[in-house]
Length: 196
Image 1 (cartoon, rainbow, N blue to C red):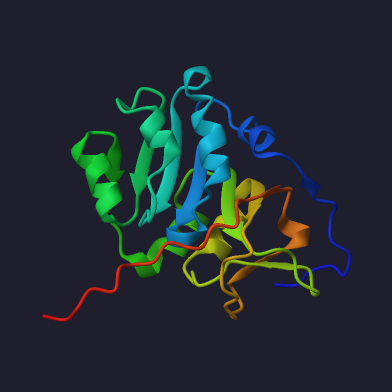
Image 2: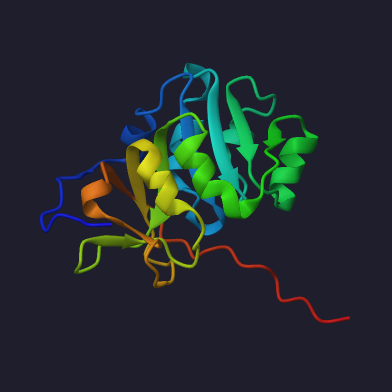
C-alpha cells in the first residue's frame, strides 16, 4: 500500500471522547487477542445505558471485556467472535456472545466483500515509528482488512506490545483518525504449565 509522505492530521483524544464516537446500531471492531482495546473498552462500558444494538466483532479475547460485564443480559451490546477463547465461550454460555463460523484464512476477504461496514474500529498498537506507522505487535491476523473497511480508525497506544515486522502488521498515520493513550499494560500471556 502506498502512503503519502505527509500523514493526515490524526487527533489525540481521551478514551471517553473516543467512546462517544459510538452510536446506537454501530458495528464496532475490537480485533483479536492482544490488539483488543482496554481503556476504550472501559470508557464504552460506562455508556451502556445510553446505547442500544451496538454490535462488536472480535476474536479470541484474552482479557475480560468491560462492555460484556456492564451488560450481562446483552440488552445493549451484542458480542460476535470469529473464534472463541475461554472468555468468549463463557459469554456464549451466558447467552451474550455469538460465534461466527468461518475459515480463518478467509476473514480478510469477508471484511472486504461481505460484511457490513465497520463504523468504529479500535485496535491497540505501539506509538508511531519514524516511518509513520503504528505497529500492531505480535498479532499478524487481518488488521489490514479491518483498517481498510472502517469508517473511523482509532488506535489505542500500548508500548508494551512487542514490535513485529510484516507488511500487514501496522497502520500508517494517514489511515488513522484518532489516537488514545492506553494503559501500557503488558499483553496477556498463557500460563506456562508443566508438561504431563
